[in-house]
Amino acid sequence: MRILMLGAGGTGGYFGARIHAAGGDVSFLVRPARAENLLAHGLRVSSPLGDVHINPKILTSPSSAASEKFAVIVLSCKAYDLDAALDSIAPAVGPQTLILPLLNGIAHLARLDARYGPARVLGGIAHLAVTLAPSGEIRHLNDFHRLIIGARGNTASPHLPALSELLVRSGIDFSLSANIEGDMWDKFIFLCTLAAATCTMRGPIGDILETHAGAAFIVGLLDESLAVAAKCGHTANPEQLALYRNHLSARGSTLTASMLRDIERGGPTEADHILGDMVGRAAAHSVETPLLKLAYSHLQAYELGRRRKQA
Image (cartoon, rainbow, N blue to C red; front, top):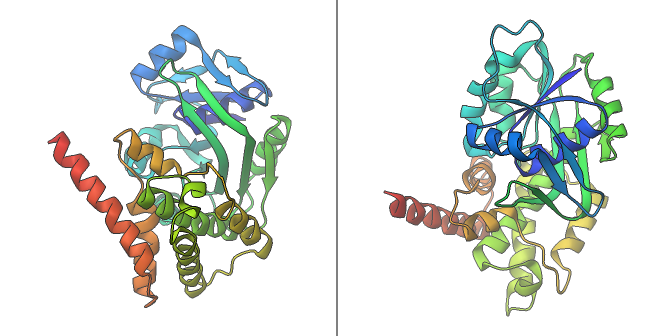
């Protein structure tokens, strides 16, 4: 089974390296600069769970003339790069190719469904904290590397069992979900709260909790996100919600959203795809979300300033 990883950055590079090390036939579709680095140094992962160093198969553009298409294509790009990503993988997609997006949020599903149909678009959730070092090495920041995937359509794919078996062999904390869209909604609720809180306050959860109204701000964001989800037909899994509440109320926690790290380096964010999507769904269902709207406006102001500096 041939697998194509779109990109060899933090998420795609980490999971791709683990799958390759487990015997998977993995290729990485990367930009020329990343390809040059990988050819010179290989794909290196530094992790508390064990380092990995592989010599990956590299593509800078898939050939439309290839006789064998990929069985699975994993999308680990940022949401703002999704359209370009879909164009770049088009030659690699065959009639039975599965698309596995590991993007944050849920807004991307509608765009992928429109192009490939829900039976071929899996749901996926990656719980992983990594960063890409200037040297090109992927650095795993803790001992947590969880991957959840699941089918969404009514037609069973012949590739899904083989993919699941490979992921089990890879040593990743993997599970196959019977309700992947529900799981994605749960993470969407958590991520909206985490990103809104840490980006607005420019600090980790532990610091926010030490402020005058930080705890109330976090709880308010979570309550608003839960209310929107309920109006959209999703009730959060009680066990998962309890876990997320613990993460969001842990004194001394250094937890932040990756979106804050994007801001700190002056890069673009997924504000529209995460907070903008939640705020839009709230408006469509007449749910009042003053805290989420404030946090989204804050991120919009950041984006406007960032673009003005680049002009």
